[in-house]
Length: 256
Image 1 (cartoon, rainbow, N blue to C red):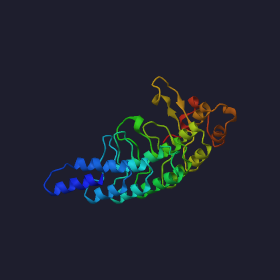
Image 2: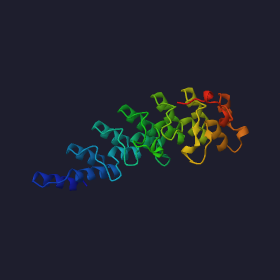
Image 3: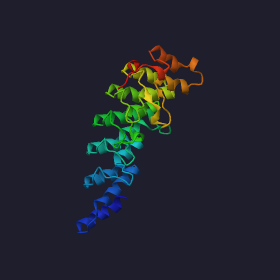
Image 4: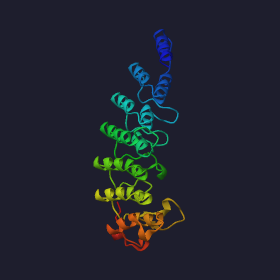
C-alpha cells in the first residue's frame, strides 16, 4: 500500500490532481488493516485525520473497535475527535463500552485502557450515542457498559463523573440495565453513586399498547426464575425498592 501512496504523491508533485477522498480512503484502509506505519505516512502527507468510510466511521472508530491502543493514541495526538458519530450515531467511547472483546488477547485490560485514553483526550463521559430524536439511538457509555456487565468500566466511568441517572430518550436507566442482567455488584455500585432506585419508566417506550410502568425492581423480578430467592431482588428491596409499582404514589418515585 505504501508504494501506491508514494506513487500518487509523486504524481501530485508532477501536477496530477488527486482528490482528498482518495487519500482519505487509503487512510481508512490503513487503519482497518492495522498498518500503523502507513497511517503515520499519510498523516505526515497531510491527510485529514477525520476522514470517514461509507458508514461514517473515522480511523479512531476503527482503532477503538479493534482495541488498538497505539493507533488510537497516534490518531488522538494528531487531532482526531473522540466524540465523532458515525451514521449509526455511535461515538468511539460507546463503541468500546458496548462491545464484548472476549476473543482478544487481553480484552479487559485493553478495554479499560482504551476508555481511559479516550476520556483523557476529551471523550464525553455522559455523551449520548445519538443526535436525533429516536430513542433507539440514545444511550450513554455508562448504560452500555452496564448492559454488557463490564464492571471495571462501569466503575471507571462513575469515578470520572458519569451520571447514573441519565436515562436518554429511551428512559431506561443504568440501574434498570443491571437489574435486567442480574449483575448485583454493578447495581450496588450504581446505588452508591446516587442511582435512583425507584425511578419508574413507562412501558409505552417499548410497546405502545402497554400503559403500565416499570422500575428496576420489577425488571429484576421479571428477569428472575425465582423472584422470592433472587440476589438482585433481595438487594433492591433491602435498599428501599417498593412494589406494587402501578399503585406507587408519584411522590415516592425518584424521577430525574
